[in-house]
Length: 163
Length: 372
Image (cartoon, rainbow over all chains, first blue to last red; front, side, top):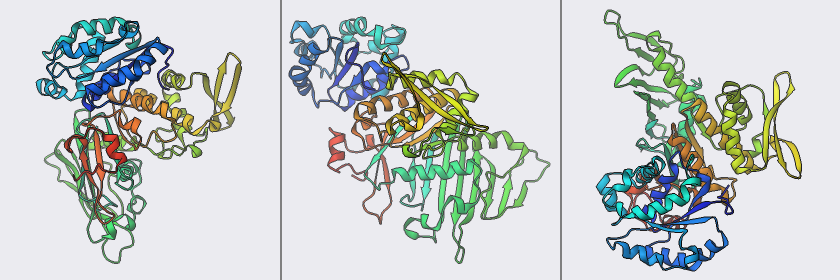
């Protein structure tokens, strides 16, 4: 059964197939409550993610107060300015939107740690479950620290078993 | 875990090699007629051998030769890692002139690089570890496969492990209309159309009563009004599965056979999950598990299977469903295809093909071919 929209849940918007594969791996981790997370079809580039977010998802966030939206994008070496683009949204929903991704492209991250995107996703979930930085402290991921803290504080209680 | 499957001259599979590379879950995609289900048919031959079918004529027919080419041997090879051991089994079949039934040309089982037994037509040679004993040789009917019948005390454990693994392969292409809820004998050997799924469930619960918790947890996610389920005795050696649903308006108990096709697949999925968890690890091949499911169920259904097998065992699935396909990735999706009925199937890892921005659209366009 699809996620229950009237209970706490996470929707994942991904930029492309690689970021979606990271999400696919994330939900394979045994500690994840897979019934609380849904990975949406990828948008096809960060501008389309932004467009999809502003066009439809903001409205849905207002309609579904238990929804948390995780936006997975490559930062393409643009640093926080990429994240800021997604933060230009109304305050009543912005606290339930989280923008996460490698500071470069997923392919660069893959080369750095020699893992497939799915395995990266599994390791990121493992780190979240254990409450340690794990792979999140990688040079291409550590810039997510504050956003990750905010995300974990909001979703860990329902997304992770024993959370 | 399946490491390698090789088939030659069987239906659309010629010089066909598939290496799942240690992936716990694998997806096979491709157009109709590309050979996905034929991979399942090859696995079914190995499964039948493991379950004791040794008459070649009951495993393959003359019509199974690729393009009717009966002058070339049909070859099946399987390599699996079980625990710390690697088993390699090879069976080659031929159809000499004036024969009506295929016969064994070669057969060999190798464990960790050492030949346990080998065979050329009727002559079987058993390895002997003890140097003062000669190799044992004997003849066997050349229309019989040797693996199910070999009784070698020196290799009984290894033979047993491999034969049990073959027999325990779960190969599914369920037909819900045939899935009744009557159980007679508990079994560990579900058949491909799943018409004995109630026997499988019954056998699982008899051996592992704790499997009920796994089954119930999964089913309550997909059918929130499920109360419980139980077998009721209907005769001396038969029982029937009853499923109770309840809500604040009341409750009702229904025979399992009146469940919808999709709900029967929920049950079957739950049995697969529970069997893998309690009686596994299993090797499973499920041909189009998304059949009969509503669109909102497909994603969670596939994820549930992938997650379960990530923790042990291995599952191969085929699918045409975009929601199912999106739950897999470039390194665990294999693309099958063939240019025409006169040419063999080709298989390539999706990640080895030219990068594609939108896999689903390319599939819709019929534009994803493994030779490109």
